[in-house]
Image (cartoon, rainbow, N blue to C red):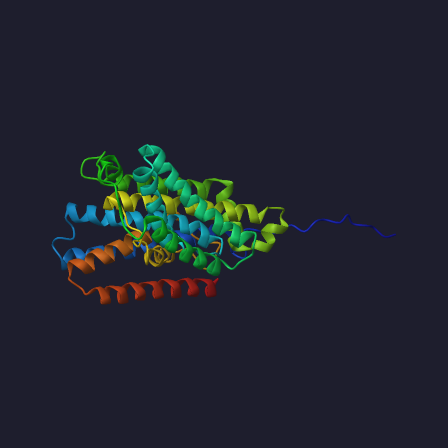
Length: 337
């Protein structure tokens, strides 16, 4: 007598690093965050001994203030890199959003709150185009965002006529960044804190975050599970674009002008912050807390080296070395796993 077995559909495993237990994965991720934080403490302690100015409240405020733009870009990019992608357009995209904020508020006379909202939404549009190119047209993320980097750079120069747009008649715009709702603490730092809090909740407490990790861990298995990977990829890149728009608002508010050529190089520092914070370039792993720590490490390094009068060329060498060490550590962790 033969028995027949009912066919069962294959169940796709979308859990990241499936060969390790969830407890071990959580402990490993926590240790990596603690290691990054310990590195931040060691670097800060060294500069506090090397320069008596470093550990003053005024300089600490400068460090936090300089972290805002890199932090906003890095937080949005964290989602993209967790999916196994990359976004090279965040620097020039930020410049384009800054220019658009000047167009909306200065040139078109749009009310300040609406102009800020439109500039942030314009960043979402940039991210949407990136997501469409990657998810629907199946372009490699490197190529798709490299093309957008060049497009955004050109549009920023064309729209602004290669000249800064000054917010002279909009003093309230500058207060978005340099004002102080909390005495002694610039508003820009509060904006970054709220942005990181929202991003952290989205990544750890929502279905968007769950699918972000799933896509980065095994995109094919995630698709076999019935998840519309294309739609969620577009949503993830659009979310990263919103943070690009927020960074554009913050940097133009800080400078009091929209500079069309400001963003070049910011994409490298933002991606470096994400990698230093423990996010894997292979996808499937990363946290917002780690990214914030990575952004602070870059800001502390830049600030401390400037206080010690280290030449800009050597600052780039040191930062590049730190990035290489972070990437090598990530590769070593993957090989061990």
